[in-house]
View: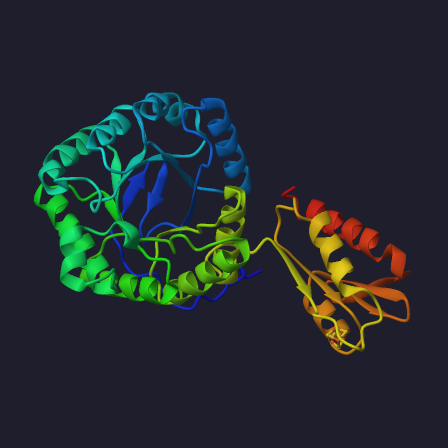
Length: 367
Ligand code: SF4
């Protein structure tokens, strides 16, 4: 038969130049990649590699590690070598660690032009070293550490100030013939952040790394990031993303992937279509939806599972899904691809859905 049409997206990707972060292509020819950052001490190589392994398993594409001291720099060669995904060294204040990270074999180095003294004078040397080693760069402008000259000019970290800093640093690298960089202009306010990226996107074809910095604990940070990334990705802006949460970094990856899946920028995996429940519900929808989500969280094939509290929208949604249940009278009608295959008592709904999900996954031949 005809291959299925790809799911619709809200806008075509903005055309950006292609760079490599190790083995991962970044730019409009490649899918939007998901990044996170380790929270371990970089000097604790085993813990750092363990956390990178967890991030990799969660679907992280690229990982960043902090490098504030010489001991951290000394740990980079082993981390860069043993990590399953490309490693970006995060450098503030001390340009000597930029060179150490390049020598260590890191896939990329993040530099913050706002807090490296006389950064402009160092650009030529950084460009040469990065070029020789095939290392890419992220110019990471951050509202909290904006170049003092710009802070004085604009009074605070406005979108225009963030963009002026980024464009200036980009032009310095380009004057030295170095083009393998992406740019971020992070701010903790999604409105300022979105405006900054929109302005930056108008100024050049650089790949852009999206982030709402210091977005907060999981609940607030998830929403700030989702609204800001959604506003930009729905215009095709954004080549890599990092959700910053005051929470374990695996959570950042899960949120990032879910944002991309919601916008059809990644294949949707497990999708639970569950109703909010209401006065008509005849089963405990929250528990049912949670148990099904938990039971299927390791599924690697796309699967849409409907969990509906009653017969109003229940059968309709259950039919649209790969698999579903519509509940009523202490029983659940189990639907597979639109057909009722059986009716089971309430206490067997979860078990039956999980069985059927695994059967469908096995039949799809991927698992
Ligand atoms: Fe209420 Fe039924 Fe709709 Fe769930 S499916 S929200 S229980 S009407």
